[in-house]
Amino acid sequence: MNKTEIIRILEETAGNLGKIIESSRPETSGSLNLKIVKGRPLFFCRTEEGKQKYVKMSDDEQIKRLSYNYYAKKLKAAAVKEKKQIDNCLDILSKDPEKSDVDKVTQRIPEAIKDNLSYSELTNEGYARSWQEGNKVVKKRRIHDKDDYHRFKTLRGDYVGSKSEVIIADRLYVKGIPYHYEIAFTPEAEIDVSRPVYDQSGFIAGYEVIGFSPFDQDTLHPDFYVLNKRTRKAYFWEHLGKMDDPSYCLKNFNRFMRILDAGYIIGEDLIVTHEDSKHPLMTESIDAIIEKYLM
Image 1 (cartoon, rainbow, N blue to C red):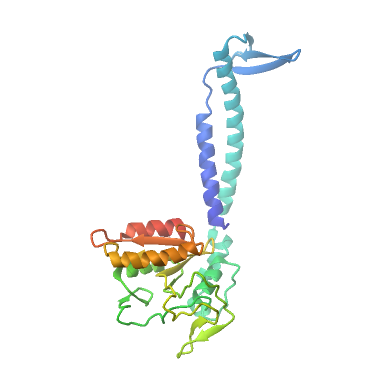
Image 2 (image 1 turned 30 degrees about the horizontal axis):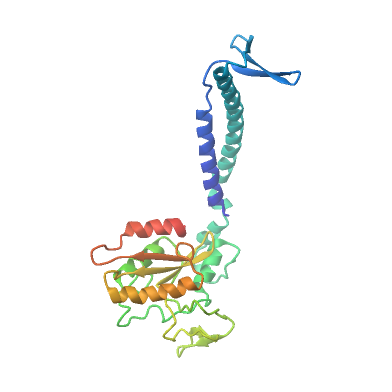
């Protein structure tokens, strides 16, 4: 858990404590005083003048009101004390975050120096850069290459297969979310990154592992592979762009069944968006997904 998450939790807790303080008000005047005499509880009401008045056990309603007053007073006192402690912590954590947040270090380093660095994977930013730049994932094709299918250019310079994929890629890029486009993925196979296979240009194209090759017809290529830098959890993101095409739906149904049968869960490991000719993908939906899963 990083500092931002801690601050969010503390702020929520402080807000709840504030509500407790506001709601912990006496329902009636007077406070409860309890005495135990020969093992029996005796209730007394202490008035504002400091006098004590015996309350009969038969007066259930007054005993309940006084009991709530007693509880509300204790609860409010504890909430005030705890909120003050949390407010002090928030005050300290919120001061000069540029100096206290280790992930800000990477962002403040000049670009000319960044090119010569090997980033510490102990920081979220360093881990994200290693994840993005490393060869731990296999791509179906070279990014930045235009072909008959990949004709739409993103802000990052990739060529993707549809305008909707451009929108998703650009929203990820603008918000600083690391992503890979169309990695090779076989749900049933375990990738062995110690045995790389290189293409004609000298780039890693796959790995020598039984049942896996980026060039096999059965190999899947999810649209995006995205990373939450804070939690370091990666998700596949599939966009279904032709939901009013029966053959397209059948093809993707079979793909999804392979992924689900391998133990991947939609909403936990797999993000899915969709659209058809009458219901286009909205940027608000993309932003909501990014906020929920990737920020």
